[in-house]
Length: 195
Image 1 (cartoon, helix red, strand yellow):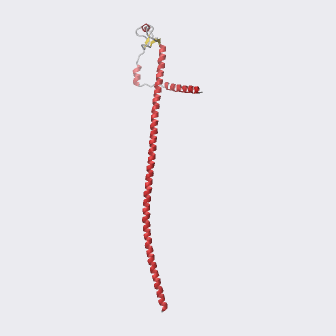
Image 2 (cartoon, one colour):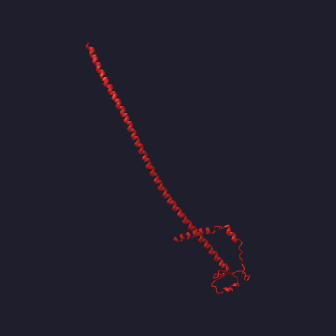
Image 3 (cartoon, rainbow, N blue to C red):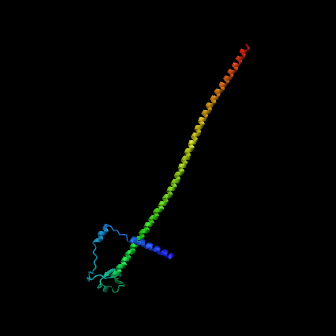
């Protein structure tokens, strides 16, 4: 079961890598202009024969006549085989470049995500701080309003108490005057009934 999973992962990896390798390679105009006029000769200048072999020791192409000079070399192989190795090497180099690019891109993304997470944490802390400051400002504002209302209530209450006290004094004075007037009226009534 695990073997199948490994095979699936390998197939998916190979498919992904092939997609990267199959992408068209873009080169700059300057690089293209440098290589567009390069002439590659397929014949040996010395012998005038077609290149058929490759010397890995000297990293050079050979015609059949050049082989005599390379008898002591450890590996002289057909040019087709060398080009196949070169293509494989180039494909592996491209794959390595693609993997390195993907790794670099992944590292960049991880770094960006970490920075975003840190920014998110900072924003969260800033929001908590702002909320706390607003709560303190609101509490202070409510406290100030309460103090003002308490002072205002006390002032108005004192004014009302003073006004009530004055009215009560006036009513007591009026009551006293009315009581005296009643007494005086009763006295007059008594005097008038005695006569």
